[in-house]
Image (cartoon, rainbow, N blue to C red; front, side, top):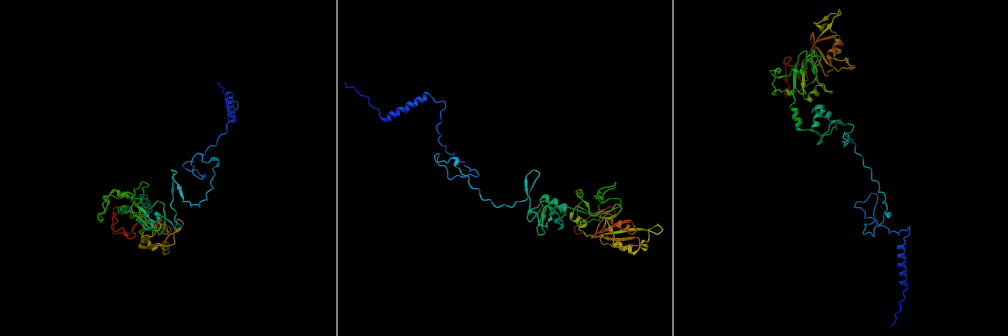
Length: 362
C-alpha cells in the first residue's frame, strides 16, 4: 500500500491559522484595559415634521446612509426685518383682557351724550342710559358710553328710545308756600308730594291717565324758594329740563314781586313804594348788579302797581330776585312766578297740577 504524503499549506492558509490562534489566545487571556473599537459615525436623525426656528436643511433625508450628521447642520441667515406695524391703542380691563380702544376724535370731538343734548334728542343723563341700552348708533355702529363724535357724524336712536320718551310726562304745578321744590329739607315736604289723582286740576284736558310710575324720575326744572309760590315745572323729559335750566338756556321766567322799603326814619313803607323808590335804583335792577362775583345778565324790571314789581329774567341764580332787591334797599314780601317761556300759570289753583299738553311747548 502506497503511503500518502501530507499536503503542504499555502501562504494564505498559514496566515488564516495564525489569525485564528491569536483570536483564541485573546479570548483565553483578555486584556485588563481593552481599547474600544472605533465607532462608526452615527447617522443624523430624520428631521421633525416641524422645522426648528433658525435652522434649515439642504435636502430631505432619503435614508440613514444619506443623512447629514447634526454637526454639519448650518444655521440659516437671519431674515430681513419686517417694517414696523403701527401699534393700535389698547387698554387693559380689570380682568386683564385687553380691549381695543376706538380711535379718538379730533380736537373738535364732543362727547356723544353732550352732542345728543345739543341736538335736543334727550338730556345727557338720558343719553348715557340709552347708550348703555344699545339704543344709539353713530354712523350705523352701536355707540359706547363716553364716545367722542364729530359734527358730521350721523347719530340715530332706536324706536325703543323714542317710545320710552313718548311716555315721559311734564307736569305744571301751582306750588303753594311752605313746600320746597326738590328734596325734603328742614321738615318741609317736597312739592312732588302734591302730585296725586285728587289734586289734578279738573279742567286739565290731557288724555294722559295718571299712574304713580310717573313720579319716578320726576324732577323740578327751575326751583322756587319755600316762601315763593307760582308755576313749578316738574318733568321726566330731559329735553324739557335742558330747555328750561340748561347751561345755555335763555328761557324767560316772569315774576310778580311785592316789595317794601325803609323810610329815612327807619320805619317800613308798605304802600306806594314806587313813589319813594329812586329811578336810578330801578335802572340798577335792570342792569348793573352782580351776584357771587359775576355781573348779572340784563333783566326787564318795571312797576306793575305802586307796591309790586314785574321781573323778567333769563337766568336763575339762587334767591336771585331777593338778593337783587336787597342791594337796592328793597325787601321782598311776596314772590310769584307766573310764566316760563310760553307757558303761563293761568287759572291753575294753588296746590293743583295739570299735564303739559302735546300742543304746548316752552
